[in-house]
Image (cartoon, rainbow, N blue to C red; front, side):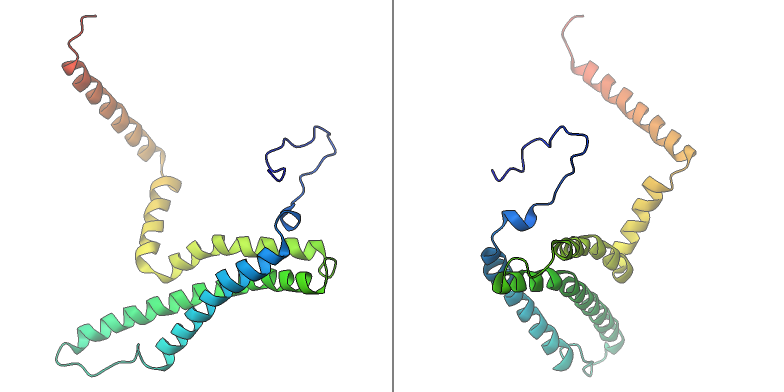
Length: 188
C-alpha cells in the first residue's frame, strides 16, 4: 500500500526520502483537508472567540453579594479563554503555511513551491504538537503541577528514591507471591 511498508534499500549510500507530497493527492489536501476540515472549524472558533471577548461574555457583571467569588471565577475563565486563544493562534501559525503552499501548488502547478519549502512547512505543522504541551504547562496551573510532579518523580529522582522504589517493588512482589502461594493447593 503506497510503499510505506517496504524495507529501505540495503545500499550504504541510501537515504530515507519523505514521500508525503507524492502520496496524498493535492485535491484532497486542498478541498477536503483544508477547506472542510480546517478552515470551516477555524472560522467558527475565531467567530466564537471574537463574540466572547468583544460582546462581553467575559465582562464583569454586578454581583448580588458573592462578588469576590464571582470575580475569582471570572478571572479563571478569562485565563482559560486566553490560553485557548493562544493555542488556536499557534495552530494557525503552524498549519497555515503548509495549507497555503498546498493551495498554491494545486492551482499554480506542481513545481511552483520548492520541495524543501514543503518539508519546512510539514515540519512546522508537526512542531505544533510539540508546542501545545509546553503552552498548557505555562498557562494552566493544574497541568503545570502535574508536569512538575512527573518531572520530580521520574527525571530528578535521586539514588535514594530509586533504591526505595526498588525495595518497595521487591516487597510488593514477595507479598503477592505469598498470597498466590496460599491459594495454591497443588502439591509440589
